[in-house]
Length: 323
Image (tube, rainbow, N blue to C red; front, top):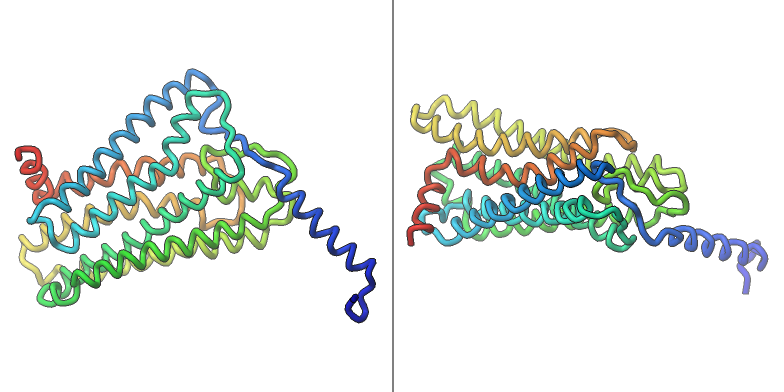
């Protein structure tokens, strides 16, 4: 029975409109990636370069995971968080690099709608976890340097596990919001993505509807997460540097070495993310290069940054190889 004031004809019109929108939204079953280059000779070079980078990333990060989990001398919370960061870097790189490497070999760069959504969810899930974990690692350094006598009391094993669990939950919720924003978009025109990975702004460009509000929501979600965590990290380091004035020269040197490595990782990851997501919805030619930087190069550099200046990790690796 029709509701009061609404005729059966209006009911049918609304139903047909919904069905029409559903048909439009599923009109595209796959997307085609333009990648980093369409020139075969450049693609072959990219294949070799990114294959080497990916192998180094996986081997370097998994070496840190094995070293920190098997060495009794690396049982502090700092190395627990480092092991988690290395594991996340391996997964994060794996959400982008294999597809980029495979696409560099073949002419066809098609990806199904479902695979595209899966890649979008995975990349933002792991990226969100990494952002939050870097913030947790800064908190760990703050407690270790500013409250050394209370460090073991505050940074208990239970709290460390809880903080890591919260980073995974936060990353999941962040990515779920992004996925829900994209799911409601109708794709009925071009299916060519000017990128090497399924990301929000390239997909918004293809949507046959006004995406202004969704673009603002993306900035509010991805952009503000990056900005707020970066500001929190910067404020924490200002406090840490201020407190180092009361430490001995040896203590300052060791603290600056540890914090310097961490801040380098933070800068390498956050600056490209801020450039990408802290602006209105639009596709910029530099977006692909920024994605290469924070999604592929940074996970490779993290093991080098954390181990080259850390004698404890290097010694633990030597013991691991000489056993």
